[in-house]
Length: 316
Image (cartoon, rainbow, N blue to C red; front, side, top):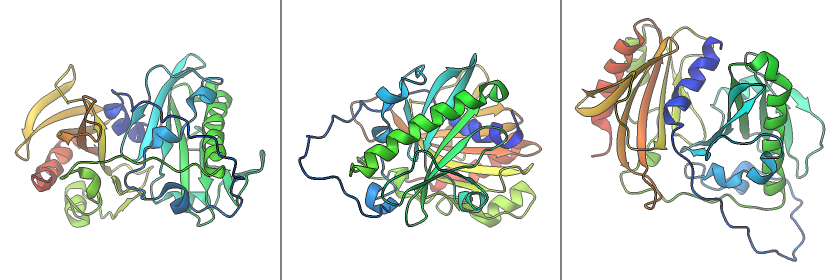
């Protein structure tokens, strides 16, 4: 797995330990004709900070191409699920791309079949041999299906098939006028914060990372990336949902910035995670998380120093 792909999977792997809420019941059948006008992302999704991305996926159709290994994982800005492709475990993630996606899309390959309704476009922009599909709305905002697999060389066509099936279900639903459901976060929720400005500044990250970087996030505001995807020094701050964190083999529990935290060194990088308040669904054993991921020399040293700055600023 390449550097940027491994780092992209680093925070996802930490949070991929719980399923998302039950599928949204089908809407009543309407006799009204489906809408045909140009579709913007805001029209389709509404408030981008509270979207339930798992509720937009058609898992009955996805299962015709790949069987998820467990319940999908809902985070604040994406929905992910694991499957097995060509003998290797693969991770499929659907949600907002980071803000740098606009630069990559300029050189992306248009996907012309099938043609899409309502002014929607699909393009393919691979990352280190792993297919990425972007659904572009008429306001040039986009959603992304990303794929991550250790066996990407053997699984490339099958990964693309799963990504395509996933995105086609989203297109069908949104083009027909389906509106995204939204999560009701609690007071003091991390969902109300901007990950690029609420806890650490560009100057603070640059000083600890040793290079000058500027944070850029996505439409959800729940993640921020300092540095370029293929750089040797990168910091990511992400807000997510998951089970109550605990120490396990390879995950050390300690106090960082006055908060109970869990430090893990993975794939040449390091993550520091702390739990926050309960998640939006009171019926599930789930809490919000803040997680700092660092790829750099002495990654855990950098991650602890940044967490010591960020964690005291979390809502009390």
